[in-house]
Length: 497
Image 1 (cartoon, rainbow, N blue to C red):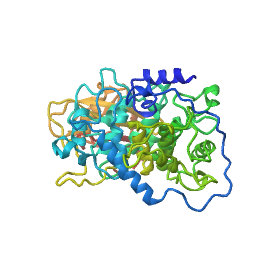
Image 2 (spheres, helix red, strand yellow):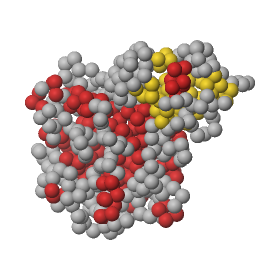
Image 3 (cartoon, one colour):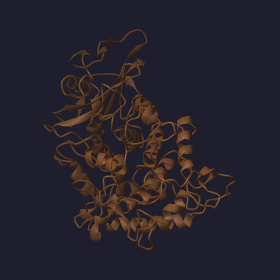
Image 4 (cartoon, rainbow, N blue to C red):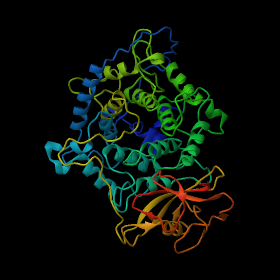
Protein backbone atom coordinates (compact mmCIF):
# COMPACT_ATOMS: atom_id res chain seq x y z
CA UNK A 1 0.00 0.00 0.00
CA UNK A 2 1.37 3.43 -0.88
CA UNK A 3 1.79 6.15 1.71
CA UNK A 4 -1.01 8.20 0.13
CA UNK A 5 -3.53 5.35 0.11
CA UNK A 6 -2.57 4.35 3.64
CA UNK A 7 -3.16 7.82 5.00
CA UNK A 8 -6.46 7.95 3.12
CA UNK A 9 -7.50 4.63 4.61
CA UNK A 10 -6.91 5.93 8.10
CA UNK A 11 -8.73 9.17 7.39
CA UNK A 12 -11.86 7.31 6.30
CA UNK A 13 -11.90 5.50 9.62
CA UNK A 14 -13.37 8.56 11.25
CA UNK A 15 -10.25 10.12 12.75
CA UNK A 16 -10.31 7.33 15.28
CA UNK A 17 -8.17 6.70 18.25
CA UNK A 18 -5.72 3.92 18.08
CA UNK A 19 -3.17 3.76 15.34
CA UNK A 20 -4.98 6.10 12.97
CA UNK A 21 -4.94 9.18 15.09
CA UNK A 22 -1.76 10.82 13.86
CA UNK A 23 -1.62 9.30 10.39
CA UNK A 24 -4.88 10.99 9.47
CA UNK A 25 -3.01 14.24 8.91
CA UNK A 26 -2.81 15.39 5.34
CA UNK A 27 -0.68 18.53 5.12
CA UNK A 28 1.71 18.61 7.99
CA UNK A 29 2.87 22.16 7.37
CA UNK A 30 -0.71 23.40 7.35
CA UNK A 31 -1.36 23.29 11.10
CA UNK A 32 -1.52 21.06 14.18
CA UNK A 33 -3.38 18.31 12.35
CA UNK A 34 -0.96 18.29 9.46
CA UNK A 35 1.14 15.53 7.98
CA UNK A 36 3.99 16.02 5.52
CA UNK A 37 5.34 13.91 2.71
CA UNK A 38 8.38 12.29 4.27
CA UNK A 39 11.69 12.18 2.48
CA UNK A 40 13.66 10.19 5.03
CA UNK A 41 15.03 7.01 3.40
CA UNK A 42 13.29 3.85 4.49
CA UNK A 43 16.20 1.45 4.11
CA UNK A 44 18.60 2.34 6.92
CA UNK A 45 19.25 -1.32 7.56
CA UNK A 46 18.91 -3.62 10.51
CA UNK A 47 21.23 -3.56 13.47
CA UNK A 48 22.91 -6.68 14.78
CA UNK A 49 23.94 -5.85 18.33
CA UNK A 50 27.28 -6.87 19.71
CA UNK A 51 28.38 -6.45 23.30
CA UNK A 52 26.60 -3.44 24.74
CA UNK A 53 27.64 -0.97 27.43
CA UNK A 54 26.43 -1.74 30.93
CA UNK A 55 24.29 1.35 31.38
CA UNK A 56 21.96 3.49 29.32
CA UNK A 57 22.80 7.02 28.21
CA UNK A 58 19.64 8.90 29.20
CA UNK A 59 20.12 9.53 32.92
CA UNK A 60 17.34 9.78 35.51
CA UNK A 61 18.06 13.50 35.73
CA UNK A 62 17.68 13.93 31.96
CA UNK A 63 14.42 11.99 32.00
CA UNK A 64 13.12 14.06 34.92
CA UNK A 65 13.93 17.29 33.05
CA UNK A 66 12.26 15.96 29.92
CA UNK A 67 9.13 15.14 31.90
CA UNK A 68 9.01 18.54 33.61
CA UNK A 69 9.44 20.46 30.37
CA UNK A 70 7.13 18.13 28.44
CA UNK A 71 4.33 18.62 30.96
CA UNK A 72 4.79 22.39 30.74
CA UNK A 73 4.41 22.25 26.96
CA UNK A 74 1.29 20.07 27.11
CA UNK A 75 -0.24 22.48 29.60
CA UNK A 76 0.24 25.22 27.00
CA UNK A 77 -2.02 23.28 24.60
CA UNK A 78 -5.05 23.65 26.88
CA UNK A 79 -7.76 25.89 25.46
CA UNK A 80 -9.08 28.88 27.36
CA UNK A 81 -12.22 26.92 28.29
CA UNK A 82 -10.10 24.17 29.84
CA UNK A 83 -10.54 21.68 27.01
CA UNK A 84 -8.13 19.39 25.25
CA UNK A 85 -10.73 17.60 23.17
CA UNK A 86 -13.29 18.69 20.63
CA UNK A 87 -14.65 17.60 17.30
CA UNK A 88 -12.39 15.44 15.13
CA UNK A 89 -8.76 14.87 16.02
CA UNK A 90 -7.71 16.63 19.22
CA UNK A 91 -5.20 16.58 22.02
CA UNK A 92 -7.02 14.40 24.55
CA UNK A 93 -4.23 11.82 24.44
CA UNK A 94 -2.42 14.38 26.58
CA UNK A 95 -4.19 12.83 29.58
CA UNK A 96 -2.29 9.57 29.14
CA UNK A 97 0.99 11.51 28.93
CA UNK A 98 0.14 13.65 31.96
CA UNK A 99 -0.64 10.56 34.05
CA UNK A 100 2.56 8.79 33.01
CA UNK A 101 4.53 11.90 33.92
CA UNK A 102 2.87 12.20 37.33
CA UNK A 103 0.52 15.12 36.69
CA UNK A 104 -3.19 14.83 37.53
CA UNK A 105 -5.56 16.20 34.90
CA UNK A 106 -7.64 17.87 37.60
CA UNK A 107 -4.58 20.00 38.42
CA UNK A 108 -4.35 21.33 34.85
CA UNK A 109 -6.43 24.50 34.60
CA UNK A 110 -6.09 27.61 32.41
CA UNK A 111 -4.85 30.55 34.45
CA UNK A 112 -5.35 28.54 37.61
CA UNK A 113 -9.14 28.58 37.21
CA UNK A 114 -10.06 25.31 38.94
CA UNK A 115 -13.61 25.49 37.58
CA UNK A 116 -12.16 24.85 34.11
CA UNK A 117 -9.82 22.03 35.08
CA UNK A 118 -9.09 19.57 32.28
CA UNK A 119 -10.71 16.58 33.99
CA UNK A 120 -14.07 18.24 34.60
CA UNK A 121 -14.23 19.67 31.08
CA UNK A 122 -13.35 16.29 29.53
CA UNK A 123 -15.88 14.43 31.66
CA UNK A 124 -18.60 16.87 30.60
CA UNK A 125 -17.70 16.28 26.97
CA UNK A 126 -17.81 12.49 27.32
CA UNK A 127 -21.21 12.72 29.01
CA UNK A 128 -22.70 14.72 26.14
CA UNK A 129 -25.42 12.65 24.40
CA UNK A 130 -24.07 13.61 20.96
CA UNK A 131 -20.49 12.58 21.74
CA UNK A 132 -18.54 11.30 19.87
CA UNK A 133 -20.57 11.75 16.67
CA UNK A 134 -23.68 10.63 14.84
CA UNK A 135 -21.73 7.69 13.39
CA UNK A 136 -19.35 6.54 16.12
CA UNK A 137 -16.81 3.76 15.68
CA UNK A 138 -15.39 1.51 18.38
CA UNK A 139 -12.07 3.35 18.59
CA UNK A 140 -13.92 6.51 19.64
CA UNK A 141 -15.02 4.73 22.81
CA UNK A 142 -11.65 3.04 23.32
CA UNK A 143 -9.88 6.39 23.06
CA UNK A 144 -12.37 7.83 25.54
CA UNK A 145 -11.92 4.96 28.00
CA UNK A 146 -8.11 5.11 27.95
CA UNK A 147 -7.95 8.86 28.43
CA UNK A 148 -10.80 9.06 30.93
CA UNK A 149 -9.01 6.49 33.06
CA UNK A 150 -5.75 8.43 32.89
CA UNK A 151 -7.62 11.63 33.81
CA UNK A 152 -9.14 10.03 36.91
CA UNK A 153 -12.62 9.54 35.44
CA UNK A 154 -14.02 6.04 35.96
CA UNK A 155 -14.72 5.11 32.31
CA UNK A 156 -17.67 2.89 33.26
CA UNK A 157 -19.24 5.66 35.35
CA UNK A 158 -18.74 8.85 33.36
CA UNK A 159 -22.36 9.84 34.00
CA UNK A 160 -25.76 8.31 34.69
CA UNK A 161 -26.05 7.48 30.99
CA UNK A 162 -22.44 7.10 29.79
CA UNK A 163 -20.55 3.84 30.33
CA UNK A 164 -17.54 3.68 28.00
CA UNK A 165 -16.75 0.05 28.86
CA UNK A 166 -20.27 -0.94 27.79
CA UNK A 167 -19.90 1.20 24.67
CA UNK A 168 -16.84 -0.86 23.70
CA UNK A 169 -18.65 -4.13 24.48
CA UNK A 170 -21.39 -3.09 22.09
CA UNK A 171 -18.98 -3.43 19.15
CA UNK A 172 -18.14 -7.11 19.79
CA UNK A 173 -18.38 -9.16 16.61
CA UNK A 174 -20.53 -12.28 17.09
CA UNK A 175 -19.53 -13.60 13.66
CA UNK A 176 -15.81 -13.22 14.50
CA UNK A 177 -15.54 -13.53 18.27
CA UNK A 178 -12.60 -11.58 19.66
CA UNK A 179 -12.80 -8.72 17.18
CA UNK A 180 -14.31 -5.34 18.04
CA UNK A 181 -15.67 -3.27 15.20
CA UNK A 182 -14.87 -4.26 11.64
CA UNK A 183 -12.19 -6.94 11.71
CA UNK A 184 -10.64 -5.32 8.64
CA UNK A 185 -9.65 -2.44 10.93
CA UNK A 186 -7.46 -4.51 13.23
CA UNK A 187 -6.51 -1.54 15.38
CA UNK A 188 -10.05 -1.51 16.80
CA UNK A 189 -9.37 -4.90 18.38
CA UNK A 190 -5.93 -3.90 19.66
CA UNK A 191 -7.31 -0.84 21.39
CA UNK A 192 -10.19 -2.87 22.79
CA UNK A 193 -7.64 -4.93 24.68
CA UNK A 194 -5.77 -1.82 25.79
CA UNK A 195 -8.97 -0.18 27.03
CA UNK A 196 -10.67 -3.19 28.63
CA UNK A 197 -7.54 -4.53 30.33
CA UNK A 198 -5.74 -1.25 30.92
CA UNK A 199 -8.61 0.82 32.32
CA UNK A 200 -8.96 -0.98 35.61
CA UNK A 201 -11.36 -0.28 38.47
CA UNK A 202 -10.78 2.52 40.95
CA UNK A 203 -9.23 -0.03 43.32
CA UNK A 204 -6.89 -1.33 40.63
CA UNK A 205 -8.75 -4.58 39.87
CA UNK A 206 -9.17 -6.05 36.40
CA UNK A 207 -12.80 -5.26 35.69
CA UNK A 208 -13.40 -7.61 32.75
CA UNK A 209 -13.21 -11.42 32.85
CA UNK A 210 -10.02 -13.09 31.69
CA UNK A 211 -12.01 -15.29 29.30
CA UNK A 212 -12.85 -12.17 27.29
CA UNK A 213 -9.26 -10.96 27.23
CA UNK A 214 -8.03 -14.41 26.23
CA UNK A 215 -10.30 -14.34 23.18
CA UNK A 216 -8.95 -10.94 22.13
CA UNK A 217 -5.39 -12.16 22.69
CA UNK A 218 -6.04 -15.08 20.34
CA UNK A 219 -7.01 -12.62 17.59
CA UNK A 220 -3.96 -10.46 18.20
CA UNK A 221 -1.71 -13.51 17.95
CA UNK A 222 -3.43 -14.57 14.71
CA UNK A 223 -2.65 -11.17 13.17
CA UNK A 224 1.07 -11.21 13.93
CA UNK A 225 3.07 -10.95 10.71
CA UNK A 226 5.84 -13.33 9.77
CA UNK A 227 8.46 -10.69 10.58
CA UNK A 228 7.22 -10.54 14.19
CA UNK A 229 5.31 -7.26 14.03
CA UNK A 230 1.82 -6.07 13.19
CA UNK A 231 0.12 -3.57 10.88
CA UNK A 232 -3.16 -1.63 11.15
CA UNK A 233 -5.21 -3.94 8.91
CA UNK A 234 -6.36 -7.52 9.39
CA UNK A 235 -3.80 -10.17 8.47
CA UNK A 236 -5.37 -13.29 10.01
CA UNK A 237 -5.96 -15.96 7.38
CA UNK A 238 -4.27 -13.94 4.62
CA UNK A 239 -0.79 -15.28 3.71
CA UNK A 240 -0.05 -12.17 1.67
CA UNK A 241 -0.75 -9.82 4.56
CA UNK A 242 1.00 -12.04 7.08
CA UNK A 243 4.06 -11.89 4.86
CA UNK A 244 3.89 -8.12 4.40
CA UNK A 245 6.15 -5.68 6.22
CA UNK A 246 5.00 -4.68 9.69
CA UNK A 247 4.54 -1.22 11.13
CA UNK A 248 6.53 0.08 14.10
CA UNK A 249 3.53 1.87 15.64
CA UNK A 250 1.08 -1.03 15.57
CA UNK A 251 3.79 -3.39 16.77
CA UNK A 252 4.18 -1.25 19.87
CA UNK A 253 0.42 -1.09 20.41
CA UNK A 254 -0.06 -4.83 19.83
CA UNK A 255 2.76 -5.72 22.22
CA UNK A 256 1.14 -3.53 24.85
CA UNK A 257 -2.26 -5.10 24.21
CA UNK A 258 -0.85 -8.58 24.78
CA UNK A 259 1.00 -7.65 27.96
CA UNK A 260 -1.79 -5.68 29.66
CA UNK A 261 -4.06 -8.66 28.92
CA UNK A 262 -1.86 -10.97 30.95
CA UNK A 263 0.66 -12.26 28.42
CA UNK A 264 4.18 -12.33 29.96
CA UNK A 265 7.11 -10.56 28.34
CA UNK A 266 8.79 -13.97 27.92
CA UNK A 267 6.00 -15.19 25.64
CA UNK A 268 7.29 -16.22 22.18
CA UNK A 269 5.03 -13.75 20.37
CA UNK A 270 6.24 -10.88 22.55
CA UNK A 271 9.83 -11.95 21.99
CA UNK A 272 9.27 -12.01 18.22
CA UNK A 273 7.86 -8.50 18.39
CA UNK A 274 10.83 -7.39 20.46
CA UNK A 275 13.18 -8.86 17.84
CA UNK A 276 11.30 -7.02 15.07
CA UNK A 277 11.76 -3.70 16.86
CA UNK A 278 15.41 -4.49 17.51
CA UNK A 279 15.90 -5.08 13.78
CA UNK A 280 14.67 -1.55 13.05
CA UNK A 281 17.07 0.28 15.36
CA UNK A 282 19.26 2.98 13.83
CA UNK A 283 22.66 2.59 15.54
CA UNK A 284 23.74 6.22 15.45
CA UNK A 285 20.59 7.68 17.06
CA UNK A 286 18.70 4.86 18.81
CA UNK A 287 15.60 5.61 16.73
CA UNK A 288 13.36 3.00 15.15
CA UNK A 289 13.26 3.21 11.37
CA UNK A 290 9.49 3.28 10.78
CA UNK A 291 7.62 2.57 7.57
CA UNK A 292 7.66 6.26 6.63
CA UNK A 293 11.07 6.98 8.14
CA UNK A 294 12.38 8.05 11.51
CA UNK A 295 9.86 10.09 13.53
CA UNK A 296 8.86 10.79 17.11
CA UNK A 297 5.32 9.37 16.97
CA UNK A 298 6.40 5.93 15.74
CA UNK A 299 9.29 5.86 18.18
CA UNK A 300 6.97 6.85 21.02
CA UNK A 301 4.49 4.09 20.25
CA UNK A 302 7.25 1.47 20.08
CA UNK A 303 8.72 2.59 23.41
CA UNK A 304 5.25 2.63 25.00
CA UNK A 305 4.80 -0.97 23.84
CA UNK A 306 8.10 -1.95 25.46
CA UNK A 307 7.15 -0.06 28.62
CA UNK A 308 3.80 -1.86 28.84
CA UNK A 309 5.60 -5.21 28.64
CA UNK A 310 8.15 -4.30 31.28
CA UNK A 311 10.99 -4.33 28.73
CA UNK A 312 13.58 -1.64 29.42
CA UNK A 313 14.06 0.43 26.23
CA UNK A 314 17.45 1.64 27.46
CA UNK A 315 19.33 -1.59 28.06
CA UNK A 316 20.14 -4.89 26.40
CA UNK A 317 18.80 -5.16 22.88
CA UNK A 318 17.86 -1.48 22.74
CA UNK A 319 21.24 0.00 23.64
CA UNK A 320 23.24 0.28 20.43
CA UNK A 321 27.04 -0.17 20.19
CA UNK A 322 27.53 3.63 19.95
CA UNK A 323 25.59 3.93 23.21
CA UNK A 324 22.25 5.23 21.92
CA UNK A 325 18.72 4.15 22.88
CA UNK A 326 15.16 4.93 21.71
CA UNK A 327 14.76 7.15 24.78
CA UNK A 328 17.89 9.08 23.76
CA UNK A 329 16.32 9.69 20.38
CA UNK A 330 13.09 10.96 21.90
CA UNK A 331 14.86 13.35 24.27
CA UNK A 332 16.95 14.61 21.35
CA UNK A 333 13.67 15.46 19.59
CA UNK A 334 12.58 17.74 22.44
CA UNK A 335 12.96 21.49 22.45
CA UNK A 336 14.17 22.75 25.81
CA UNK A 337 13.22 24.63 27.83
CA UNK A 338 10.04 24.85 25.68
CA UNK A 339 9.35 21.14 26.21
CA UNK A 340 7.62 20.30 22.93
CA UNK A 341 8.81 17.44 20.72
CA UNK A 342 9.33 17.77 16.98
CA UNK A 343 7.90 15.15 14.66
CA UNK A 344 10.85 14.84 12.26
CA UNK A 345 14.50 15.34 13.22
CA UNK A 346 14.67 18.13 10.64
CA UNK A 347 11.70 20.09 12.04
CA UNK A 348 12.18 23.46 13.67
CA UNK A 349 8.85 23.66 15.56
CA UNK A 350 7.15 21.22 17.96
CA UNK A 351 4.13 19.07 17.12
CA UNK A 352 1.30 18.50 19.60
CA UNK A 353 0.92 14.82 18.71
CA UNK A 354 4.65 14.15 18.75
CA UNK A 355 4.89 15.90 22.12
CA UNK A 356 2.18 13.69 23.59
CA UNK A 357 3.63 10.47 22.23
CA UNK A 358 7.18 11.45 23.12
CA UNK A 359 6.44 12.50 26.70
CA UNK A 360 4.31 9.44 27.45
CA UNK A 361 7.11 7.14 26.27
CA UNK A 362 9.96 8.97 28.02
CA UNK A 363 7.91 9.00 31.23
CA UNK A 364 7.70 5.20 31.10
CA UNK A 365 4.03 4.98 30.13
CA UNK A 366 2.15 2.49 28.00
CA UNK A 367 -1.09 3.65 26.38
CA UNK A 368 -2.79 4.70 29.59
CA UNK A 369 -1.85 5.00 33.24
CA UNK A 370 -3.61 5.20 36.57
CA UNK A 371 -4.09 8.83 37.59
CA UNK A 372 -1.67 10.28 40.13
CA UNK A 373 -2.91 11.85 43.34
CA UNK A 374 -3.99 15.47 42.74
CA UNK A 375 -2.34 18.41 44.47
CA UNK A 376 -5.45 20.61 44.18
CA UNK A 377 -6.90 20.86 47.71
CA UNK A 378 -10.03 18.74 48.07
CA UNK A 379 -9.79 17.20 44.60
CA UNK A 380 -10.40 13.42 44.67
CA UNK A 381 -8.18 11.05 42.73
CA UNK A 382 -11.27 9.60 41.00
CA UNK A 383 -14.63 10.93 39.91
CA UNK A 384 -17.57 8.91 38.67
CA UNK A 385 -21.33 8.48 38.84
CA UNK A 386 -22.23 6.90 42.18
CA UNK A 387 -25.75 5.62 41.45
CA UNK A 388 -28.28 5.13 38.69
CA UNK A 389 -30.67 7.98 38.03
CA UNK A 390 -34.19 6.61 38.00
CA UNK A 391 -35.77 6.96 34.59
CA UNK A 392 -32.48 7.62 32.79
CA UNK A 393 -31.51 4.99 30.23
CA UNK A 394 -28.03 3.55 30.64
CA UNK A 395 -25.86 0.63 29.57
CA UNK A 396 -24.07 -2.14 31.40
CA UNK A 397 -21.31 -4.41 30.10
CA UNK A 398 -22.17 -8.12 30.22
CA UNK A 399 -20.33 -11.34 29.36
CA UNK A 400 -21.78 -14.84 29.44
CA UNK A 401 -19.25 -17.67 29.42
CA UNK A 402 -20.71 -21.16 29.08
CA UNK A 403 -17.29 -22.82 29.15
CA UNK A 404 -16.97 -23.44 25.40
CA UNK A 405 -14.14 -20.90 25.06
CA UNK A 406 -16.18 -18.30 23.18
CA UNK A 407 -17.95 -15.94 25.57
CA UNK A 408 -20.98 -13.93 24.54
CA UNK A 409 -20.35 -10.20 24.94
CA UNK A 410 -22.81 -7.32 24.81
CA UNK A 411 -23.89 -3.93 26.08
CA UNK A 412 -27.26 -4.14 27.82
CA UNK A 413 -29.54 -1.10 27.70
CA UNK A 414 -31.93 -0.64 30.61
CA UNK A 415 -33.78 2.14 32.41
CA UNK A 416 -33.41 1.73 36.18
CA UNK A 417 -36.23 2.60 38.54
CA UNK A 418 -33.94 3.37 41.47
CA UNK A 419 -30.29 3.93 42.45
CA UNK A 420 -29.48 0.24 41.93
CA UNK A 421 -30.87 -2.66 39.95
CA UNK A 422 -30.62 -6.46 40.19
CA UNK A 423 -28.87 -9.18 38.24
CA UNK A 424 -32.27 -10.57 37.30
CA UNK A 425 -33.32 -7.27 35.75
CA UNK A 426 -30.05 -7.06 33.82
CA UNK A 427 -30.52 -10.56 32.40
CA UNK A 428 -34.13 -9.83 31.51
CA UNK A 429 -33.14 -6.64 29.70
CA UNK A 430 -30.39 -8.51 27.87
CA UNK A 431 -32.94 -10.79 26.17
CA UNK A 432 -34.45 -7.84 24.27
CA UNK A 433 -32.08 -4.86 24.51
CA UNK A 434 -28.53 -6.06 24.00
CA UNK A 435 -26.00 -5.06 21.37
CA UNK A 436 -24.97 -7.27 19.76
CA UNK A 437 -28.08 -9.42 20.18
CA UNK A 438 -27.97 -12.98 21.47
CA UNK A 439 -26.03 -12.43 24.67
CA UNK A 440 -28.94 -13.86 26.67
CA UNK A 441 -31.63 -15.87 24.92
CA UNK A 442 -33.30 -17.44 27.94
CA UNK A 443 -33.02 -17.43 31.69
CA UNK A 444 -34.67 -19.42 34.48
CA UNK A 445 -36.25 -18.49 36.69
CA UNK A 446 -37.61 -15.75 34.46
CA UNK A 447 -38.60 -13.47 37.32
CA UNK A 448 -38.31 -12.94 41.04
CA UNK A 449 -35.25 -13.77 43.08
CA UNK A 450 -33.33 -16.95 43.65
CA UNK A 451 -30.37 -18.64 42.00
CA UNK A 452 -30.23 -18.77 38.20
CA UNK A 453 -30.79 -22.43 37.33
CA UNK A 454 -30.54 -22.18 33.56
CA UNK A 455 -29.13 -19.64 31.11
CA UNK A 456 -29.15 -19.91 27.33
CA UNK A 457 -30.43 -23.50 27.66
CA UNK A 458 -27.49 -24.57 29.83
CA UNK A 459 -28.78 -25.83 33.18
CA UNK A 460 -27.07 -26.33 36.50
CA UNK A 461 -26.11 -29.97 36.93
CA UNK A 462 -23.68 -32.05 38.91
CA UNK A 463 -20.91 -29.84 40.25
CA UNK A 464 -21.38 -27.09 37.67
CA UNK A 465 -23.66 -24.09 37.96
CA UNK A 466 -24.01 -20.48 36.88
CA UNK A 467 -21.79 -18.07 38.78
CA UNK A 468 -21.64 -14.28 38.68
CA UNK A 469 -19.00 -11.62 39.20
CA UNK A 470 -19.14 -7.82 39.26
CA UNK A 471 -16.12 -5.66 38.38
CA UNK A 472 -13.73 -8.57 38.71
CA UNK A 473 -14.98 -9.83 42.07
CA UNK A 474 -14.86 -13.52 42.98
CA UNK A 475 -17.43 -15.60 41.10
CA UNK A 476 -20.25 -16.74 43.39
CA UNK A 477 -23.71 -18.25 42.83
CA UNK A 478 -25.66 -16.20 40.28
CA UNK A 479 -28.57 -14.92 42.32
CA UNK A 480 -31.22 -12.94 40.47
CA UNK A 481 -31.57 -10.68 43.47
CA UNK A 482 -27.92 -9.66 43.53
CA UNK A 483 -27.52 -5.90 43.58
CA UNK A 484 -25.97 -4.32 40.49
CA UNK A 485 -24.85 -0.70 40.54
CA UNK A 486 -24.17 1.96 37.95
CA UNK A 487 -21.24 1.07 35.72
CA UNK A 488 -20.81 -2.43 37.09
CA UNK A 489 -19.18 -4.82 34.64
CA UNK A 490 -21.22 -8.03 34.96
CA UNK A 491 -19.85 -11.47 34.13
CA UNK A 492 -21.55 -14.87 34.27
CA UNK A 493 -19.67 -18.14 34.05
CA UNK A 494 -20.79 -21.75 33.98
CA UNK A 495 -18.61 -24.09 35.97
CA UNK A 496 -17.56 -25.34 39.36
CA UNK A 497 -17.76 -22.87 42.22
